[in-house]
Length: 306
Image (tube, rainbow, N blue to C red; front, side):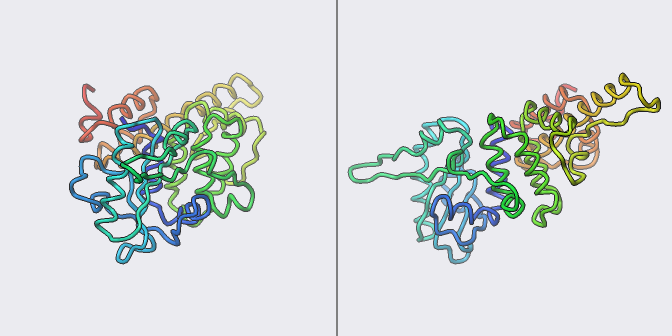
């Protein structure tokens, strides 16, 4: 069952490969001067039941010189590993150019596993490229503002790192003023993938003034609840407002995660269904919808038994 983190990483490579060619060229030494997404089924119709997460062409789809097959893995999966050579061979046969499998993972253990050569036969091995935590560089300051997608990948690959909450805040700040994310889509999917513990620490950093932000994004993502109420000076009223704000922020984040999963599965969300989701503020209910969404075929499946 795909998780929100898996879907976020998959969507980033499948929908915005143009933002990642520089990273793949620099960190994996791939000759990818530009990247465009292809339909995953274009590799080989026989592999429809085992589609890769993304298929990218460089420098373009009409005359590619390199096909990059992206597989997102959060766990070891030997059955999938045996399919990677088929992906590469099918792409080579279909497009007549070099093909490479790139495994994207936030797990050091999975990165080590995926890096092992695959023995296909005598004198015939395949070694996937791996974009794991040790390969993704830390970026901050001007570098982060210039390439916030790299900041996104570092954050998502280091969710247990003590520096993750502050780095996530800085990355959201960079995305808020980045022309490539004018619609806020990348910021939305980053926030949707962050676990509750990381979001809570981010809220704490902002609430205590330990992180200074300069844009309006915090109100959108976390709704800190700093309204002091009508009776100034009453600490009880202020604390109640903060708690309501934190709950509101958590619910908004869960709604973003739910919408992301539904879009990734190709489920149309419009009209009454969209209004119902966007207005829901019960975090437990939204979480149950997310669990259903990862296996749902229609929006009615998500709302089943309600």
